[in-house]
Length: 428
Ligand code: PLP
Image (cartoon, rainbow, N blue to C red; front, side, top):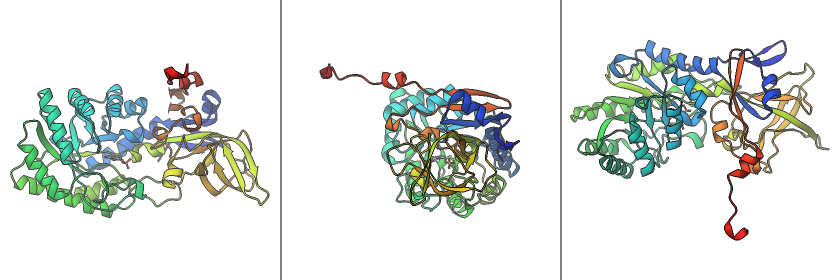
C-alpha cells in the first residue's frame, strides 16, 4: 500500500497535491512519501518478527536498506529513525549512510570491486561487516585490516547458482554472474579466514536478484545457505550471521504480483526452522519503489501523419533510465486526468536517443502541452541512476510528510554544472 491517491480528481502524495510541488520546484522532480517508506519498512520488520525470524540476541533482524535503491540522505535518515541499517557498495554510500545517522554497526559493505581505499575507510568507520565476494578481495581486506591493526569482520558472499529476478540485467545469483563464490569455495575461504590474523569471519551472505516475484528460487537458495551454515558449524567454525540479501519484488502496475512480506517471512521461517543465527536482510526496491514518483510536464504532443502520437515530456532517460535499461513498466497517471476517451501515446523524453522512450502504445486520458503526469513506482533505482546526459540538470528530489514537503536535493543551476569543469591549460 502506498500514500499516493486521487482526491477530488487530483493526485496527492499524502496530504500534498503533486501539482503544488511541481509549481513550486518545477519539473521533472522526484517526490517521495515518508508514510510509505515507513510503512514498507515496518511491514517487513513486523512480518519477519511475527514469523520468528530474529537478529542478534533474539531481537529484530537487521534490515539494512540497500542504499543503491535510493541514496538520498533524507530518505536514509527516515529509515534510520525506525532502526534500519544500510547495505552499501561504495565509500560514497557508506558516507551517505553515516551522514543519515545509520550507526556503523548496522552498515554492511557489499560489492564485487571494493578498492583498498574503500576497505580502509569502511574499517576505520567500524562497519558491521564486509561481505567478501572473491578470494583476491578477501586477501586485500586482510592486508588492509592488518595494516590498520584491526581484524575485519567478514561474511562470505555465496553465489547459490539459482536463476531469479525480473530481468537478466538484475539477476545476480547464477554462477555465470560476477557476484560471490560457489558453496565449495565459501567453505574453503571461511576456513582460511578463520586462520587469518586480519579477518574474523562472522557469517555468510547471498543476494540472488531483484524484482523477484516467485518465492521458489529464493527458498531453494536459502535452503542451500542453511546447509552451508550447518556444514561450517560441523567443521567447528563460528557462524553468527546469515545475510539473505534483498530482491523481493514489488507490485508494479499490471505486472506479476509479488509475494506478500508475510509469505516471504513464512518461507524464511520454514527454510530456517531451528537454525540459531542472527538474520540480516538487504531490501531496497520493496521499501522505496512505491514510495516515490517522478513528476513531469508535457512539452507537446507530436502527431505523425500516419497517426502515431508522441507525448513529448520534460523528463528523459537521464532522469529515469529503467524503461530504457530494463524495459521496465511504469504506470503513468496524469495529475488531473480528463474524463474524455483515452488516447494512445508513445511517451518519449527530449534526449537524442530512440531509447529515450518510456512506453509505446499506452492508453492515457487525453493530454496536452502543460499537463502534468506522474511515473508511479519510481522511488527505487530512479534518481540514483540519473545523469546529466545531454547536459540536462540533475533532477531534484522532494520528501513529503503529511501536509509538508521539503526539497531534499535541489535542482542544480547551469552555473553549478559548468563549475565542475576546468579549461585545459593549452586551450587558453
Ligand atoms: N543487496 C545486494 C548485494 C544487491 O546487489 C541488491 C541489488 O542489486 C540489493 C541488496 C537490493 O535489491 P532489491 O532492491 O531488489 O531489494
